[in-house]
Length: 628
Image (cartoon, rainbow, N blue to C red; front, side, top):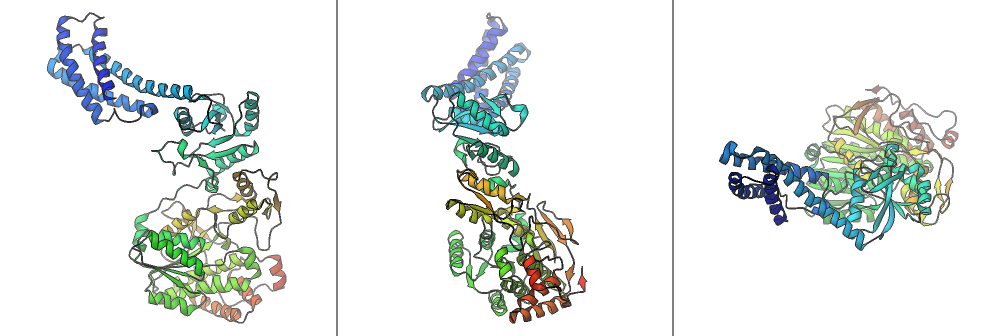
């Protein structure tokens, strides 16, 4: 390659002289030309070498490479001009400088493009029409780059038949040698036209790295409606720019349909809260707790204590942490948060400085039938853990809550809202040293409480996939994203805040079910039926973000907001929790639920619970006065 560049330098300057003097170079200028050739070769080769123009794959030249060639040639020609001017002054023909620059640029650029064209012609000649016929969905920079790469890649298993793009202005245009054949809405007609030309399309590649979740879902729906299997190029945050695009094409995952932007963390603040500290995570074996443990371990705490009742899950997460973080002191502790003495002893024995409280019962229908179990675990267990943290004087206590705590319509949501209120009350216990905060977020995709594992099992069994209502919607987050934002929120605020994470847009569960069926290579309501079973007791059509009376405040992080609502005084909280402990201890489920209604007046019980509670839904347990 260096020989080609050297030849280009000598050729360009020689032609510049010949063209300048119409093929009759005077003797005096010929005498200057020969030394100038040596100077040009020396100066330009040094510049080209330092700028690494000779390196790289010439068969992959694109517009960025052309711009680089222009910049490097400008620098090389500039230095050559200065050198020659210093030697010959005004006695050297000035137009030769310009002609030399232009010709050298054309020759080197031409060499690059010739190598690329030769590669493409060679591939076309040796592998004519080979590979699966595909459409590229998305005629932007990524789609164009993917089409070019497929065209010249000998190892590619694809043959591009054209583009699909939802931008109507692009339809009919030619991009990277392929036509934009239509939009997603007209995909079925496009496929029919291609079939008439004996072109059988086997799949589509969605190539829209910057697309939103809604745009990806629309593309998947368009492909599914046309009976076309589709795969995807990763999002911009996951795209490996140093690898070929074709090698990164993969099956579509549910995460792609959410289209969540990557979380930007202030790692300095999180490190300050965790590094070198002794941290306790309750519910450590759960889907949220286990990811939380991994994230916390990455910030190098002095000790990480894992609390859970689930023996097998606890054994698993302890082993994972020890293998991945060999320098971490990870301690598995089988304990029950409903046992105040166990929790207190654990905090004291390990001298805990920070608590992340993720232990909770979270299955809505199950908790409707087991209200007392939900109250004992989610309310009394949280009280025990927060009280132990307060008495121990830990630095911070973070409770993981749920969007179901907003205007709750079920036992689970009411218990989480009650837990938020009680945790906040500890911030008003005089000169407390502990920061008590709660963090709310929506459904975590693929967690044990999510519909996703249920849908997967139903699809694997051949269906039907059961959805409660055609219009039911939920917020979904990725597990990693939710945990990262929990850690960020833990490093923010002062005391008593309820942090609410940006949960994006509401997702229709019926659409989620249909997309999961399509991702399995099947057709909704043809191969796998979607059956609607009706809303279950305590279930809402859609979740809310803010309760009445709460105020929303911004934070330094654009994905986290603070919600301020009325708080319960410490004395009122103690009176209320005392009565709840008594009723729960005696097994009085109805009285315990009435106490929930007293503390959480916005709780709207299901019809079944209204019938059980009778006329007087709530009783006054002396929870007021409230403090703000």
